[in-house]
Amino acid sequence: NAGVTQTPKFRVLKTGQSMTLLCAQDMNHEYMYWYRQDPGMGLRLIHYSVGEGTTAKGEVPDGYNVSRLKKQNFLLGLESAAPSQTSVYFCASSYPSGRVNTGELFFGEGSRLTVL
Amino acid sequence: LAKTTQPISMDSYEGQEVNITCSHNNIATNDYITWYQQFPSQGPRFIIQGYKTKVTNEVASLFIPADRKSSTLSLPRVSLSDTAVYYCLVGGGYQKVTFGTGTKLQVIP
Figure 1 (cartoon, each protein chain N blue to C red):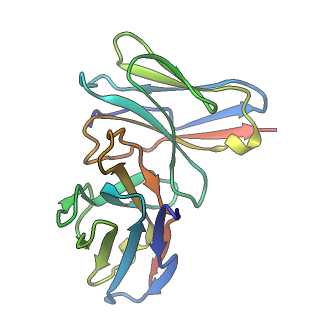
Figure 2 (tube, each protein chain N blue to C red):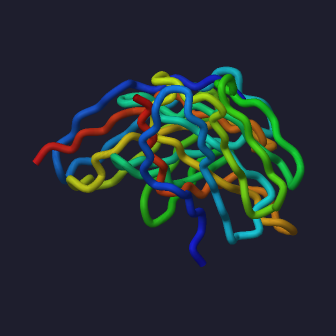
Figure 3 (cartoon, one colour):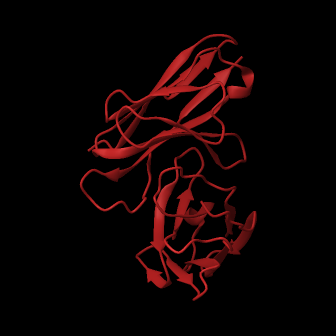
C-alpha cells in the first residue's frame, strides 16, 4: 500500500495563478484533511471531509476550495494564489471504512508551494 | 476539540528520559488523548493514544491521571533521532481535527 500520496511535491506559482493539489489514499479511509504548515509553526486545518461528496471548513479556509468526488481523492484548489499561501501543505486521512474509528491520522509527505 | 497547552520547547541529553506534559482542562468524557511526532519536512506520525491511566507501546508511554486534565508523554532513553516536534491532541469523533503548536524537543549529544 502506498498510504497517502500527494502530488505535486513542489510547485512555484506566480501571484494570481491557480492550481490544484491532489491527495490520494488507498486505505479506504472515510475522513480526509488538508493542513498547511508555515515555518516554525504547527499545522492549521484548511478543509476536511468526512465522506465522499462532503466537505467542511477548517480553521483557515479562505482562499481555498476542496472537492471529494471520489472516496480515495481529496483535491485542494487555489483559484488565485497569493504570496500568503506560500507554505507546506499536508494531506491526511483516517477512519478505515467498516472498522472502529481510533482517530489515527495518516499523513502524506507534504507539498511545498511557493507563490511569488 | 479541547484546547491543549504544551511547553513550546524542551532540551534533553541523549540517554535521558523525557517527559512532555500537556494540559487539557476542558477534556470531555468521551475524549481520547493522542500524541503525534513530526520530523522536519515530514508529516506527523501517530505515537500513542490513551483514555485513562497508563498506556505503553514500543515507542513511548502515556500517563493520564484520574482527573484526565493533563497527560504526560514519556520517551525513555532518548537519542538524537528523537529530535522532533511532539503534538498533543484531545478529542472524540475525530472529525474536525486540529493541532496546537506542539513541543519542540531538541536532543543534545
